[in-house]
Figure 1 (cartoon, helix red, strand yellow):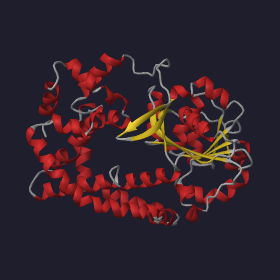
Figure 2: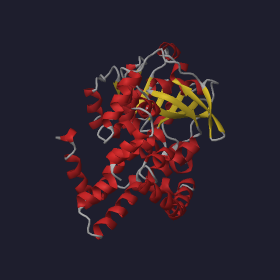
Figure 3: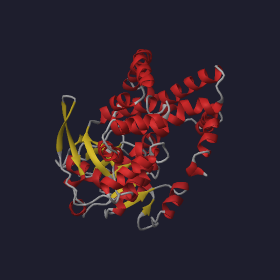
Figure 4: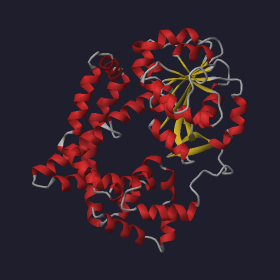
Length: 413
């Protein structure tokens, strides 16, 4: 699809550019879309719209944001917004608490820095090594805010278990004795709790167990916070010993940088998360990209053409607009040729892939995926085998062509 023709057609549906921009206002709050949109064909229109309608990009503290019950296609859900917990409120609520964060991967780093910048008493519990050194570069001070895992567990009243899934299982015997009466155990993923038969993670009954699960990478959690915005997250309560578990989950969700939060359960979060990662977020997308690229190349198209029509136009032009406005808008706004083809072909693709998703969901729900993750991650050769698999993708013609195409983008010159 020709992106210039697409944008012209889209603009033509409105009486003037200002009306078009107002219609597209939601693009700014979509974190993933905006990060990609920065180099798309519609970049200038998006930036013009943002400046015209919103002024400075940083969050205005007097914005009205409250708890809402919203109707999602007939299903009502509660959505919590950050004005429910202004900074002064959660700082006072947690004034006697020490938040101990175990792990300094993407989520540990992003959530930890955000909570620290928001004025909470945060310490890290790490092993000495790469993560320890990275934490020191970020301003965490050994003996003051940076400790061994054992020492951080002793000091913490709220334990953020942000270790990898495999490490959570491995270190649980060390963690559990420090979960004394009244403490709070916090997760950002339901994995260890839901698959307790495999992980052996079973919390004591006299603590709160909660979850705040950002819907994006830890890096995005941090960059959106620094940009004055916020990521969307889900919250869940697995165990409410104190009667305050949900309040803690919402307040901590805001403190770590969430713009809004919706309710889920540990089981629903981990099932949807594992399906999403293996499906449309990463696994299925790579499979679809590769299949279309291979067909185009086999029919004589050049690598640059095949990559542009498969990956570049989708990620740089169309996906951001789908994220901002929906697929119905995209179908209505594109050329008649693209419109007819998309309407005719989405059902055959749906029918082809739905059985794969059904099989995937069963594999997630029955624990097969969990056992594979734990088994593979526990192998002494795991890192070497992983590097081979990643190298196969990186050095494939598809993504080798992608490196060249990305280098041609004006912002990369």
